[in-house]
Length: 218
Ligand SMILES: [Fe+2]
Ligand SMILES: [Fe+2]
Image 1 (cartoon, protein in one colour):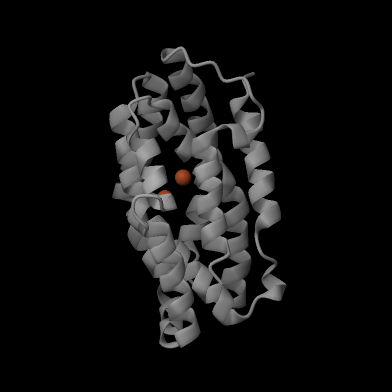
Image 2 (cartoon, rainbow, N blue to C red):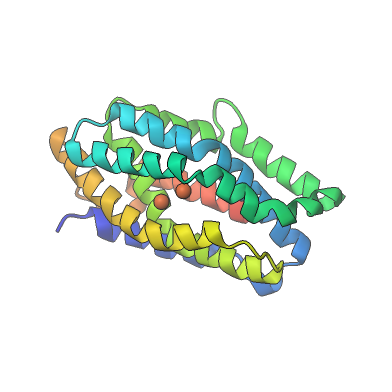
């Protein structure tokens, strides 16, 4: 077995350890984090997946992108996310929440050095491997942050959990698909993956910064 799955698991442990403790947060703090997540992930996930697909050469990586993109579009995950978060929208009436979300989103969108632009460049990179690393990192760390969102949804009494159910189950399979995609794409490009430390892979470090920014928006 290669280094990819263990590296992604180590990243997931680091992300999980850095998530804020729900009990330390107010409802407004939680709302700010969820709305920040909704804006950033809702706007960017499909573009990141699409640009990665255009850059992959290996059949394993291309198939992982194609099937994920098909599910995102046919099942309309952006709408699923909006429906899940629609009861949280009411918190936008609170000045604290508006300013926390705006600050985090503006920081993430900063050009050229903001984390969204950094991740976009990885997914558009001609090397092919950087993009599948980004997707592998998002799909694998999802088991940490979707569980956090589940606890957050309990606190805010959110009723529609389809987004969480869908991503809780499917992402376990997507994580495996994209780990295999990284291995396949690296082998196709004759890239040797040796380090077992996620910090040695810039696309993983960028996803880590993105999740830090989102989950510390409050
Ligand atoms: Fe999705
Ligand atoms: Fe997924």
